[in-house]
Length: 101
Image 1: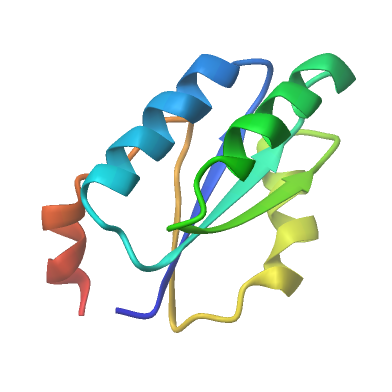
Image 2: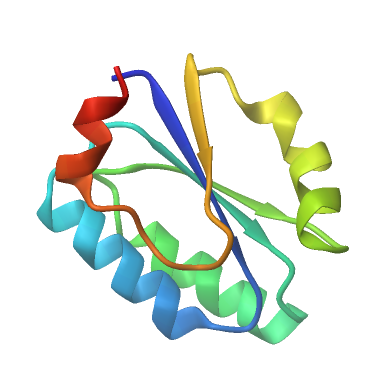
């Protein structure tokens, strides 16, 4: 697939870890973009967590603003055919993503 998953997050590093554990275990090969509007302390925590996952294509972008304002800032960084925008910092089941193409 040629897919980007955009996942907004704010001040919830434990969710970042949970999400990345899931996608890593499923050997997800597409791109994950975190639109991170966390405070500075949690943004740095998220950055450290993300660095541990070398087997996943991850773009971690600090964004300020509401969810759709963040999307406008990130859309320039999307270079895939398909894109899914998550409404919250949760995840899609990889098995279901295969039905998109």
